Length: 406
Image 1: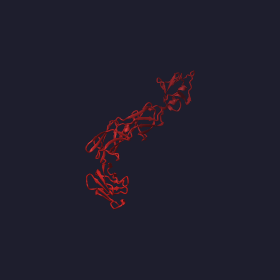
Image 2: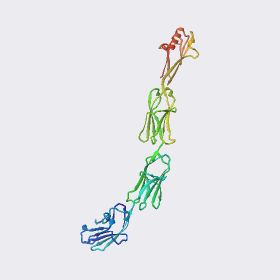
Image 3: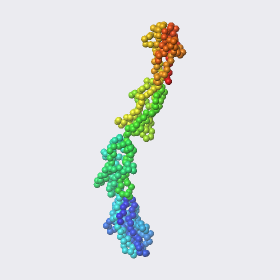
Image 4: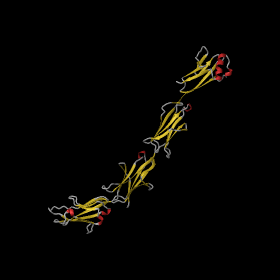
């Protein structure tokens, strides 16, 4: 009979003590090992009841073995199996009436590997977290099992999926080399587990590592501006970066000039947000606003998103005389031209002229004309000149101009 046991486990070496003769009983049981003529375990029931049987193990089995006389499950039970217990056993049973019975048992002791370890391509032992690695990098890991009887089978596992490696067996070691030609994003936090197993009866001896990676941003979006912004009004902008590891460095730029972010925080699933409060000025109209994300220590990892600003601002108005006329040269009877220059976004929808806070109405027959942004006073008289020029010097009276945005 062949019996298999795992070292430090328990095993029963069967020995049938039953007989078909009524009233017949076993009186002596002896276990021998290999070819020795000296028993290693003796049970003497002569002149005794079975419960009073005298058990005599040899020293190496003392406190480890006991003969079990349970009907149908009798034999020598060894509670803590040693690797040296491997061998051929013979059980001899002497009966009161029946002939002596001998049975042979071949015990094979499975010895788990002494050690299982993982090393990298340079032979450095690895455990727990390894890396960080970058995208596209080749990962090579060796699982090395030492000892074990029989030599263990080594397998690599990624989760519940077996990953094929290259196996090499030497006199003292079994080596399984795993190669991942190009690491990708899905390998982040992937655990690679090496199983060493030489029997279905034994729990596999394992070693494991978990991959850490440095990753560039996958995407970047500038949020918070869907259209024009108003000059002088604060707008909160968000730069959302996805996929960078570790937390990326996020910077803000306005036409190449750095801006200071309000705060930055990393959310779940490798999402980072940076916030900027922008108070635009009229001069920012048409300038390029952008946010840029880079993974620290990773070259060519920069991603950028941006937009040209559209800044709405109230009109800036300048009133001037025609460039061919000087104020001191204005004479009665001349035509005087006033030009209103208005800078605004959106462009003014209407321009109005005022004199002493009174709206000037167009009067074609009265010599007050308006052409787009130019007011024409025809055949100006002395009274009008005095009222017109004095306010320009004193800034207390005179004509004024207003421009209105839609």
